[in-house]
Amino acid sequence: MTSARGIPGQASDNSLRAQTTASERSPQLPDTDVIMFLRTALVLALAVSASLAHAEAKVLKKVAPEFPDEAARRSISSGSVRAKLAIAGDGKVSNVQVVEAEPKRVFDQAAIDALNQWRFEGTGAQQSHEVKLIFKSED
Image (cartoon, rainbow, N blue to C red):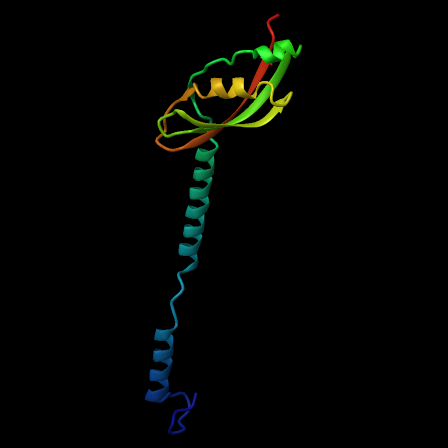
């Protein structure tokens, strides 16, 4: 490096000031260890969140559905309903949505009526749970 006077190996005061000012303006990036720690913490937080969202809801009270008279009149002896339940923080079922039914629209209402009476262990947070009910005639 040559100074303003032309002496090799010495820098002028002006060039040092320019270098210092430029480095002060550029943002400092966190070091690699900090970045890796933050990434690991984020991945762990997402994993815990995902496992809590998919944790099995603990059933405290089940109510069996009644076999519909309409199904018996139509000579339907069996069927199934798969439903998704929304569970409030206190463990009460707040919504039931039929996802699949066989045969369609025969056992839906009986399943909804029964599932609305189910109770789960309260977690303080809303949950969802899926259940499949099997209907068989006792006759």
